[in-house]
Image (cartoon, rainbow, N blue to C red; front, side):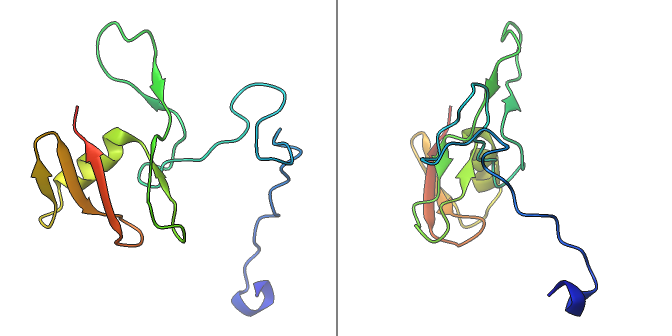
Length: 110
């Protein structure tokens, strides 16, 4: 494929070099196993606001479609869905579709 497209792809990731064990859990401490947000493409998202002490969020929502299963920060998904004309809101929950596979997805608004 590289020859056909005349591009060089990056080498495959080595889980052992990234501190990920055979069962997918991090080894050696830290945030070795990271599942980045599919909207902002970061793992840790800084929390805005006074007195947060440099707090960060990790992706805590995921698409329910097993073929997609993309992760999202609640904040990113909430902002994404609020801007969709097809999304609906009921009390403190926004219902819409996954940005990648169009499966139904929802998030609570804080």
